[in-house]
Image (cartoon, rainbow, N blue to C red; front, side, top):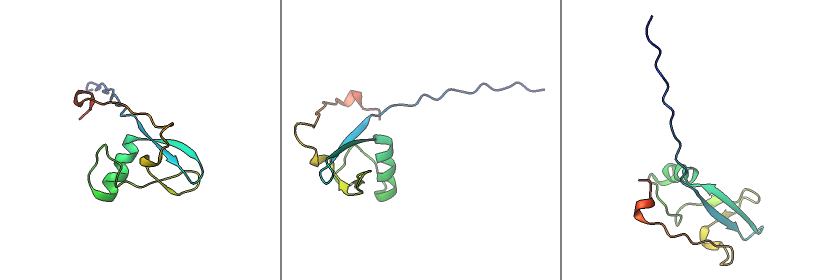
Amino acid sequence: MGKKKKKKKVQKVDYGSAEFYCRHCDYTFEIDWETIWDIQECTHGYVGYHLNDTFISCPKCDEICGDEEIPAEKRQVTDISDDALHF
């Protein structure tokens, strides 16, 4: 009999998430970047850390939300250096 191959463990990289605010129902929610990239790839064929042309709907009321609609008191600004990016 042949030898059994060992399965390699694939480590999943956590790219974080983006926060959205729905002004229609006053609801704040997060979507992970991998889901956003899947949406971007299906809709316009390229992916990136931008949200200006990606339309995310609110899970409660199904209205289109954008990251620019987050009120200033709820918005968290994080500085990201080029070395911290995973690509």
